Image (tube, rainbow, N blue to C red; front, side, top):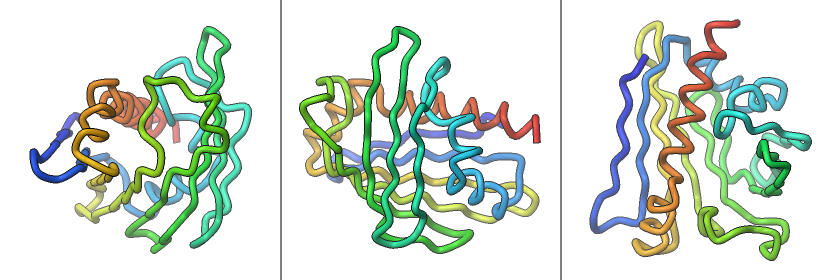
Length: 163
């Protein structure tokens, strides 16, 4: 499906990305919490993940290393704040080593809430990515963060057709 939006309210440091998928909510939640599935759709086309470790519980960590076609790698670390199957995942970005990151990546310590809304036999996903400030949010938008999430969603849509 292509029912998707990106919203950036002028007075709130959030990026809200919404998309409806042709799959039940329980399956969508599983795809976002199982590394076997996540690495098959996360990130931009052509990216791979030599590391994807997920301890999906409040206080658990999610370690991910994204490798691009040119061989560059970007390790990330997040901490789960809330897990409410199959409704909600909340995590905070906590970069492992900020010195390895490039200026084009999102600012540190963003908090992401992913809602999985039941829409009959479909699921509406609402991702609310909260930055530290409107300026930090605007930087993330300028660097293409929202477009990267939407690219992940396009890959997810294609992956769903293989299940």
